[in-house]
Image (cartoon, rainbow, N blue to C red; front, top):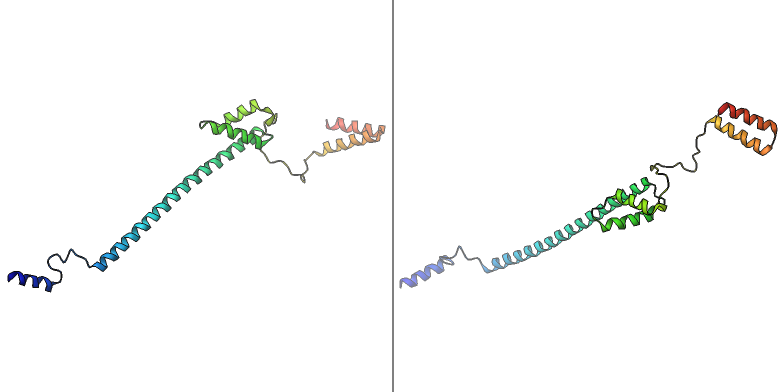
Length: 171
């Protein structure tokens, strides 16, 4: 009969000796759903992180390619490239084949092999004057040019003597 009393004691306490380890079924289901939702969200976040890292690497590659292209264009302009687009395409194709290629060496090689792409004289990339801006000429030079034109067009001896007198004065 003692066993019977023990069973009644267990039922009166609730769940008995193992009551602190057991969780009600409805609460266990909620925990399980929360865990599944959290795992799903973690997987989504991992996927987003992977996509962001891929995008970052792709953009970093594009930025370095654009910087290389910009530097190459600057060096080609400084070297005096007449046809910049053609020179850029040839130089880029030569640099793509060799990872260790130096832009200056490629430009020098291009200058030697395809000289027609470059101007004979090396020029520094400086902005040229616009059509509206006139070249400054000294007043003496301007006067001398006007006198020479007048003497050449008129054929008059007086105009020719005036030109020669001005020429002795300024030259």
